[in-house]
Image (cartoon, rainbow, N blue to C red; front, side):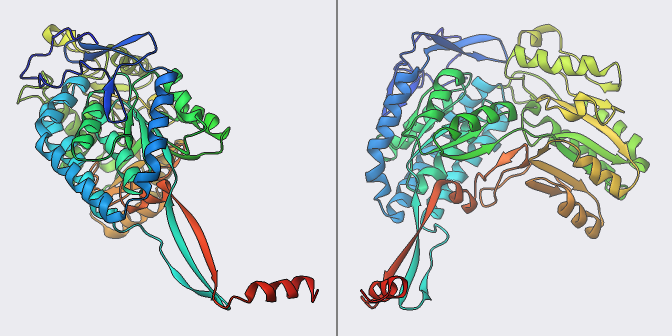
Length: 511
């Protein structure tokens, strides 16, 4: 692995430079064997942080074999033993919080204050939650439901889980996929995005240091087409969990079908932000800016479509545009920075393409350009507000994944809810109203896996996260996620030692 050394020690801890390789298999870092390399690039400067050897199919095979070998021992531990291990894991994560925050900011371009206050604390909280939840796997029951028989239900781990995580929240996605899987007794092979492997590797190393056995958590960093598809199709992988675009999710589902494996998909989103005419206009504008610009808009739950009832429409547009113009772009490690770059220049140009095409049919109120000067070296794009776009236009219907909010008016409550539901996606939404009955109706009728009221974006470990429609199926976080990572077995005892004979006589008569 080549480390160009462009990241100074105060930006990235010197002891975590990954000289031993960007794969983590059976408790040890190692190098990929694909024969090809990939660079982690600081999106704020465009400079290469390190170059590493990509995983190939042989590396995936080794990781799956390690996970398979570790499964009987880990599945055989008690819930209390797994809980103790996860408590130790949470403590190690907390001790290394600053290292995780800096590594996440460096590889993603997130402001350091965001990784310090959101990404890393959320990950530690997830670990602490699943440490407790490991002792309370749901669905245990026993009783005499059929004559002289006792029935009970066993909830068992599935086996080796193959997970694929995206680049927008690499640390949190590693936690969301790894923690419920291993808390339930599974072992796992995670493939992070090749753009952002650093914190996933640190996460696996922290697990080893916390005493989680070798092979329970394995990381392979390769391309989706090679390492990812091989992991999904691997016959020894019992389940696949994927977070990413709907288009790639369909490909994952197609591959997984060949081996009839369990599948969990968290896919794209185009979250509506519905503002009724009795909403607090100032609160709604602040919520829209925060909800649209979180992680530079690279969030599948980000507010992307604001539907505002006509009496508040122009005021909302003006307030939101004015707030966006106060957002400070800058070095992610500078204390005053509000918004960092997009993940890459490729993504920035993709976002700019959406906005440039929208000028032909909508009003770009503010933003709509990349900054000049020193920031031009990075993948920066100004916060952008687009108004008056048609409902069927691409900026309304397609996932832009950038700092862009589109605002449209509506007249009646029925129309606002219908417009909110008028996309293929259904991951998240919010409704803004001071009328509890109006807000409650919106939460019932908007088709999304999460609907916030008078807020947009907060998530908590105790509550599930997952979508409707083309946003996928299955849940992350909360005890609901155990439904994804366990299987149910019915066990039935004959209490009399003669029931089988009686059943035989009933079916076949005396013979």
